[in-house]
Length: 316
Length: 298
Image (cartoon, helix red, strand yellow):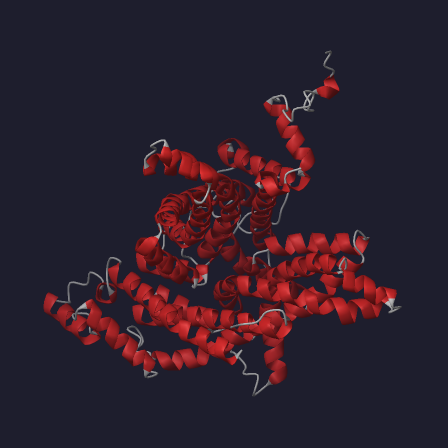
C-alpha cells in the first residue's frame, strides 16, 4: 500500500510537468502579450519603453529559459508577481486556496451524506414510490447546472428570508458559525449534481449486491433486514460512489469558478477569473496550474481510498 | 403464406431474418423499446424546430428595446421583459439557436480532431501513439472548464473562441474512445483478411475501423452536446462566451441575476431552458447507448 502510494506520487511528477508545459505554451503562443494589453495602443509608449517593459517581465528571453525559470521559482514556493497589481501571487493563492478547498470538500461531504441513504433506500424498496421519487430527483439533479442552483438559492434566501451572503469571507477558524452560514449554500449548490450521480451509482450497486449469495446467507441465518443491509451490503455501496466522486471532481473544480463568482467568494476560481479579465498571464497560469494540481491530487486520494473500502483491491 | 399486420416486424422465415420495416415503424419500435431515449429525442427535435423557426415563433425582436423595462410576466410579454426592456420569451427562443449552434460546432471540432487522431494512434501504435496519448492524458488531467477558461482568456472572449475552446477541451475524450475501438478492431480476423486480399492501410481505416467506432462516438457526441451547451452557458455567464446584445441563456442568467429580486423570472426562465436542453440530450444519449450497444440489444 505504501509502495503503491509512493509510485503514484512519483507518477504525479511527469503529469505536473506536462500540465505546466501545456499552460505555459498556451499562454505564450497565443496572439498578443501582457505588454500589448497593459499599454494598449497608447501612443505615449514608445517601442523602446515597450521593450523595456518586456525585459522587466523577462519576456525577451527564449521560451525554454522562461519556462525553466518559472518552474524553478514555483518549486521554491515563489509563484511570481502579478503583472497587473504587482502583488506577489503567492499571497493571493494562500488567501484563495483554502476557500476553494473548503467548498469542494464540503460539497463532497454533503453529497455523500445525502446520496448514500437515498440510494440505499431506493434500492431496498425497489419500484416503490420512494424509489421513483429518488430516481426522478437523480435525473433532475444531473441536469441542474450548479451555477443556476446557486442563483436560485440566492433568490430564495433573499426573497423569503431577506438574507444575502456577506461580502467578506469569514475564516472557519475565527468564526465557525459565520463560515458555516456563508459556505452552506455554495457547497450545497455544488453538491447536487455530485449527489445525483453518486445516488444513481449507489442504487444500482446495492441492487446488484442485494442479489448476491452472501446476502441470502445472511438473511437465511435469521438476521433482520436492517442488519443485512447495514452490516453486509452497505459497505459495497461505497466503492462505486468513490469512483463517481473521482469522475466528477473535474466538474466540481470547474463549477466552483462560477459558484465562487456568484457568492463573491475570493477562491481559486475567482483568482483565475481575475487573471483572465485583467489579461494577467502570470496570475492566470499559476491559478490554472494549481487548480489542476488540486484536481490531480484529489484524484490520487480517491484511488487510495479504494484500497480502504475494497479489500479485494491489492496494489502491487 | 398470408402475412397479417401483426407479422410485420417479426421473424416469419424462422431464419433469424427480420423483414425490413419502414422508417416510421422502425422508429416506433425503437421508441417502444427505449421510452426514455424517445422522450429525449422528442424534446431535442422540438428544440431544433424552435431554433430553426425562431424568427417565426418569437413574438418580438430579441435584441431591441421594445417596451418598459423589468416587467413581470403578463399577457403581452409572456415571460416579462429584461433590464433593457427586451422580451424575455423572444430572447429565450433565439437563445436556443446559440446553444445548439455552439453544441454542434464545438462537438464537430472535437470529432474532427479526436477521431482521426484516436483511430491513427490506436491502429498504428508505437511511439506516435505513446506521445499523443500522453498529451491526451495531460489534457484530461485538467478540470475541463478551467482549461476552457484559460483558452478563452488567452484568445479573448467571444462566441467563436468559446466554441473553439469547448471543442479543443472535449477532443481528448473522443480520441480516447476512438483509439480504444481501433485497438480492439485491429485484433479482429476480418482486418487480417482485408490485409491479405491487399487492402491498403487507408482503406482498412476508412472502411473497417471507422465503421466500428461510429456507434460509441454517436453516443459520446450526443452526451458531449449537453456538456457543450452547459459549458457555453457557464462561459457566457462569466462574460467569456457570447457577447451582448446577442441572446444566450448564460448571459440572460447572469444579467438576470442582478435584477432577480424585482423580477425573479429573469433568473428562473433561462436556467430552466438550460436544464431542459441538457436533460434532453442526456436522455437521448442514454437511450442511444442502450439502442446502439449490441450487448444490450434485445
